[in-house]
Image 1 (cartoon, rainbow, N blue to C red):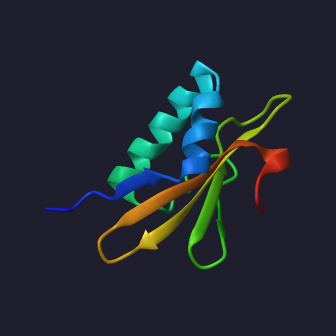
Image 2 (cartoon, rainbow, N blue to C red):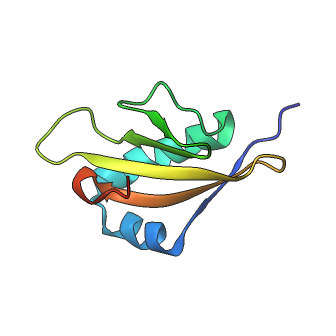
Length: 95
């Protein structure tokens, strides 16, 4: 039996999540569901990449005028905790 990951939001990311349109919140919910089941490496999402040793990011949409991204990091690999630290436009992403 595999134990799922716990996915938390930083205070900033929780606020940003609330500012997304319903469409992008649904996409974010789908990403978080995959993070819970499969862990932090999500190579099946558009423009996924690892940012350093513990951080990851991907685009929530494949193309469009405004590109939305999510950034998350593994805060505890042993007890399987991921924290989403940023959700918003690519232009303001912290990388």
